[in-house]
Amino acid sequence: MIVNRCAKPPANVDEYKDLWIWLEQNDGELSHISLEMAGIGRKLADKYKEKLVGILLADESGERMSQEAIEYGVDKVIFVKNPVFRHYRTRPYADTISKLVEERKPNYFIIGATHNGRDLASRIAVRVNTGITADCTEIDIDPTKKLLEARRPAFGGAILANILCSRHRPQMASARPGIFKPVERVIGRSGEVERIDSPLREEDVVTKLLQIVTREEVDITTADVVVCGGMGLGKKEGFKMLEELAAELGGIVAASRPTVDAGWISRDRQVGQTGKTVHPKLYVAVGVSGAIQHIAGMKTSEFVISINKDAAAPIIKYSDIALIGDAYDIVPKLIDSIRKGRQAQREGKTQGQAK
Image (cartoon, rainbow, N blue to C red; front, side, top):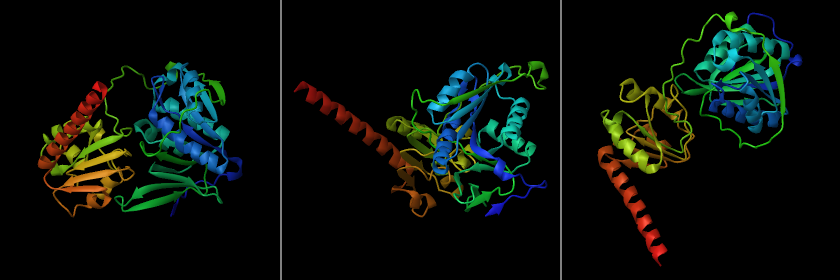
């Protein structure tokens, strides 16, 4: 157990209450990570009798997003409105939210560990003189001491460190995308929206938004079927075969870190401790050795099939089914079998309709 020690005197913890989450939005749409944070926030709020408060900075589109957040389990949304907030910029976001934290004194504050979330969370923590546990894979609250138990892999994923912030407030953590599931949306669910008009002007912001350049990324975190390739494929072209398999299974192709580092596939498809966490219904690992860093990103998969030449590969012990052999022999046969099975289904259905 690690307890943070800050240089300044501790906070009067009795003054702090509620569990906050940051509602990250992009160009007027709530991001999926916001729904994930609402999911873990709702679970903790119900368990420990806290109010779940979402912090939303946006332009007029925040009205719609506030109601959406409430329908996903948030009790109250503090909506700070200004055209400046339509797109994330470090300084205005950090200044505005830090001021809210100092005024309202939340006990807990959880932020999704996206690129923007990582940038924002650390700056808020420094400004309000508290600590933060980054990239958590588990979050809970000690029921007796009311301490946030933020857990994250340490020493290369060999252990799970439980980190507490006992003397300062708010207790902050950033949570990795893909770990926590949103609650089911309840259309029309009621909640409170507090609207604050920010006096910020565009000319007051040091950075200027000149152009938005977007790069299409693949979201592997929400897929029900993930087909992951590793260095056991031997070459970049092996991923074409995995694309075929994924298409037959209605899934998406992912990869281990070494294949990404080798330039065989884009980094947005990386599964693992330094990549993304997935929890599909079916995870197919092809030529993946199963280093602990990779296992950290897929261990919550419901069913795992591994295809590997090495019967002693670490991935085998995490597999429900292990196929030992050459991927270039097994995968084409698997694809052919799926296609034949689907064809037989269609023919059977056609014969049934004819009768």
